[in-house]
Image 1: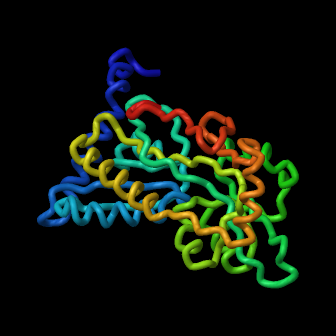
Image 2 (image 1 turned 180 degrees about the vertical axis):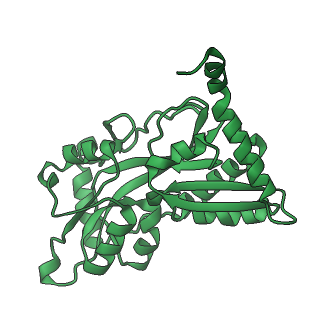
Length: 280
């Protein structure tokens, strides 16, 4: 049992740990560099966001040493709170005292499929990727017949590698499948629902705010640059005719866009409410 003085000290302990870790980072900075910034993200979010951010930081903050890695989301919030990480990039952060949360990007989950490889591949194997509880809810509402898929994977990169090798279809981040859409290895499934998959930056209130602001600018630049590169492929002639026929039905034929944060489905023209910056 803590004494009254111990309880008072406990309130300040997390901040002291953060300051200690920050000081250790600065002391450990390579010769000629000002400080070290440690960042980590969920495995499903690292490509291409983290790579593009590293390139941006190399140009814009050449005096900062960088430590970057990807891992499972469960440990990221705790590592930020303990001062081990300066920034964590996560999909579904939970509010925690002493931490700030800011929206970095709103990625889209789209259904893609490999082109037919013969008469036996007209209906390719569907791979269900675990994008979280909100996605599972919206997915099951949109595809009740696929509630028990044959293939279930916990990481997007694993599922994507599988269908590129074996053929199949599934939901993946648009930024991750963009190069495969451009090369023709994958195709968008027309009129399939889309779902938002936002990425948030989590950082400590007691961190180096100037350094964190620079990093956040770079993250948003990397996210916006990647989204600007994404272009939907043109429909094939027969697909274009079928789509035109489908749109004769008005709004009923318009694909649904799932809002994974609110658990609702909206029409393609309505966007979800944004989370205010700096709030959970």
